Length: 156
Image (cartoon, rainbow, N blue to C red; front, side):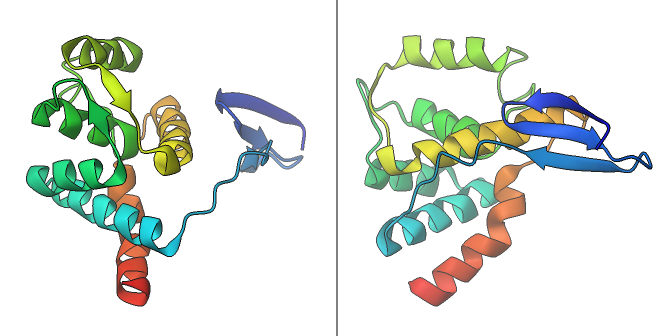
């Protein structure tokens, strides 16, 4: 490879000698293994996020261990959407993602996050950072849904 540019954390956009674009992934040091029960729970959350089923998203987040001071359903929903699915101008009220998360925290402070899903949220944010850099905003839940449905079918 001749050149690489960093776009989002550990993801690089590289060009080979002939100019062909390639993705470069580095630092595979952070890995998380989920139990069968947690995989199924997260798969259900992905399907609920893709369907934008607010009540189910909130229920699944609570089942996963999300706790906040007021347990405001709207805040729980928004944490799930931003953490595991998407961040766009309409969802974040045109705020930068960091400012939006700080706003959510001020509305209803987090007491406990679903520890098993923190690495998944990080991966979602990194992938979305890359897609934003490439002007290709995506719903991670929509992309992950076929895998989630397979997990539900095979393991539930």
